[in-house]
Image 1 (cartoon, rainbow, N blue to C red):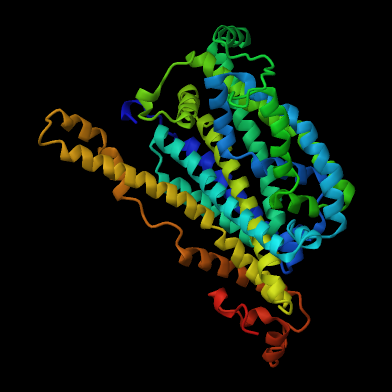
Image 2 (cartoon, one colour):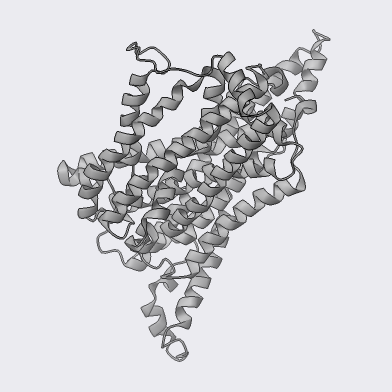
Length: 503
């Protein structure tokens, strides 16, 4: 992007973004050191089946209200109009069916993994196939969710790609691993509120700067961005009632009916009624999230009247255009750009943390426990935490996108440099890529396991200290062998994987 068109964060913006990350980590540490201190797989993976409907419902929204949706839906409305808004019709059946068909069956079976049902209904081979398909799909999806906001932020503000990916991955891995599902659900609650606040701030300021609600409506109406219900049965049409209202039902069933991340939240509820109630409470919140995204797209159109800003951005990415609009409109209001970026990364964190926890659950319940039925609870919880931390492979997928971006920059730079001798005018083209080259050659190695394991080890030792301080034999220093025998976690070294199955 041309540096003259780049927008920049103020100190207040960075502080707001930092507060988001700090609060998320704080919630994880709180649940790591309070209550049952995540000592059992039941607590770590299923939140002790003790959650009420309100936090569960907000967590259900946050799990798939990703950053891709927050910047993708406004871009869709800006480009093609409000036809996409009709997908809200699919939310009715898409939530009623899970509430009255899927939840009662899965909850009464007391399952931990949705794919356990496949073995009960069909065979173990079907269960394994379903588990592997889910793992593959979530790892790829996590990579997209991490990379999309990082790339858009880098394009518009110059914020380093590696910094955004690293911050998202490390923070998410930390609070997910030490705090378990309770931490994931409560951080989802906080992050959902941040998402709504960020979008609402953009809409309010955008309407005010565009001239008011009537002016926004006039411009979007004259720009043909208000779409009527399209009943065209042609399946090649971009969006119609049939593809959105009917096809959307199947999309909702795949997300809110059988997806492990959502099923796990239903099963963490205190009772079946609470689980069903949480599914009902998702409906108005989803409609609100959809409305905010669509209205934001309309305000963006009213602001720019469909202008093409790809020359300013140096890319035709619609995601970058949305973020450029936000930064352009909020630039003179310190704190608000940071609030929207916090909104964007809240969506990314909530999606990634849900994926981490669900991947740890299906790997443990479907792939490991059936082969090691005699595994002790202490080793099972330690392995679950290790699986939660290794869920950063999704961040690795984001790094793959980052690597492709770097290769693209490098190839463009070589092409530009090769033409300097034969084409003097190419010198100016070469200069345009200098910023890209500098970025590509100064990105450090990501996802260092040493840092992650060190942090987890410290938290684990603090947990042990808290648990020992409440034990009656804590002062019996002349009988250390009994304490070691009573607490098998002392036998597990820092590199957990080497001793997990050594019994």
